[in-house]
Length: 560
Image 1 (cartoon, rainbow, N blue to C red):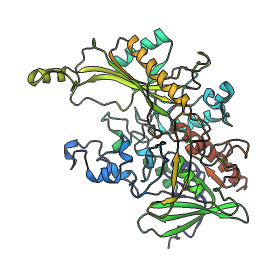
Image 2: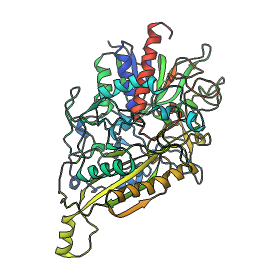
Image 3: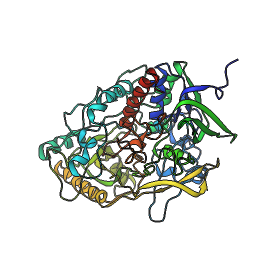
Image 4: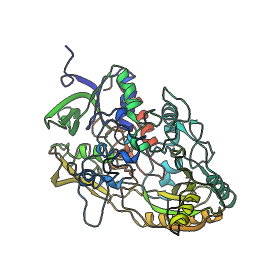
């Protein structure tokens, strides 16, 4: 008879099956280690994907009352819709609190693969301007790793995942291992040429985790468009059909779904983690599982919640929190600034059902760079993402046949939206709400975050600057926005368990190992020291591969 998975002692427990958890399982299982991969939600199959389902087949045509009742927070995310809302957490079962005047939207999934099923797929490397930002402007501290430390692991991730993109030789955005780039539209080419000629800035096609040619047994994208509803050809990267699949193929991975981890269990005599306790999602029975190493990859806020709920007599403020910094320095990219306009001289008619490129354009950071010098009003910088294409003009004037003709003639739109760096701030934090628990009896988070003056200055400059570039490219009827959305809207939460070399000033070491507990790792966005302005998932995956390769070597030397 097969052994009960809960009676085994594994080499490693990995908590979370998303972008980083999948990589941890793959990397360790392929090295011959026995891994238990725990996922709080259920498994998913390609039969659930709805990217080809027309909207008229939806029962409520996108206005499901159950979705609105049970996911009031989750529906603030563009990707949560009637097609797929059951992948997202039920907000009534998974509450969190925020103090008055400091709203925060926490958007999350509980299914195998987590947010890798619906992520935006934009994949950009950080540079040493990001890793060593404090040395340039004096704010906070540098990362304990450099670009050279991480570059080989970026290579590994990109070669496996499949990142389509174009090399640009811009030191602010290091080039990577790219599949052929997607094509830019006429309007995007015009904008690219204008910002290069008139401002000396780099606009490129987005670097995206979507295949443009067959790769690792997966088919290229067929441009159907709504990636957040799944992909039956697995053309975009999601962990269940890539890293998790590979981990399971080794025979060394035991996947346990519906396992909501409440806390890490400690052997206090040895000061080591001995496993985790989880609550079964449907039965609500509490169970324990044991291993020589525990790796938390549950997502920045969730991993930190687990550690804060794992307090012991030795660690009364939360596990691995002798520094007192666990939960602090929460960051999420500041968004809200944008500019849009029309290229009135581009007379290209929109199509009713054209190929829909699952990608946009990216304008590389140009503020506070070695080439441009220090800006007088803010530190760090922002990148701009957008697109330009013909669209139906439903806002056209007129009635009847005149209106129909105007709608079909369309309008050639162009837009840019900013993602700015969120500064690390001790006063942006999460802790445990003493009065709030989830449906499984696990204490919930209290999240307190607000963007500051530097973020506001970034967004003001980004909106004005984007409008200037659109105007320089010949756009008309330009509209701009310079405000900030509430924290959480970028869905790029990082920080809360920062890495560093000094145990008094950080939670994790440069290999994501807790300073306080040698066999406990946290390898997701928690470890970030600063947020930079690039989408963080590619960096999270590279950091995880680096941490797991270091762990593999420790196992080889019998140091675990």
